[in-house]
Image (cartoon, rainbow, N blue to C red):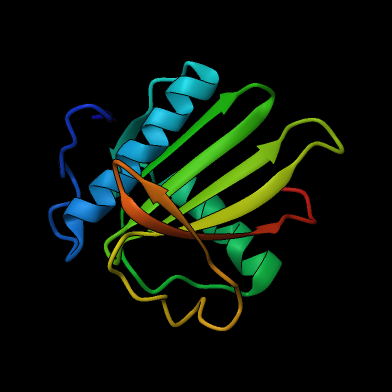
Length: 154
């Protein structure tokens, strides 16, 4: 059953097994606020067992583009279309959030973004492969993020 993420009343619903559940909930709420303000999209996530197809799509892109395999357990995910792009989000127990922006028309932007919850270490599978920039968020504290451009078709 989808869970509508509320960015005004932050909840750890579905993220309780994460050691950084509060920070991950703030990161998820930060994404919900961005999507609402930018695209007027209400952000709803599903538990990982109900979102296997979305998670598999994200993991396929990671594996084929950069030979990346995330060790942490996915907790929640979402996939939807907005403004000519397919978008997917996966939230992991470690506090990692991965999002995919995949422009549907040829030549449109396509990228994978990584965001690290406040207080989590850089996962070993990403360490040394990406530089992480910092940004402050009222909802999520300090977010560290990085990305890469998708080159192939998915």
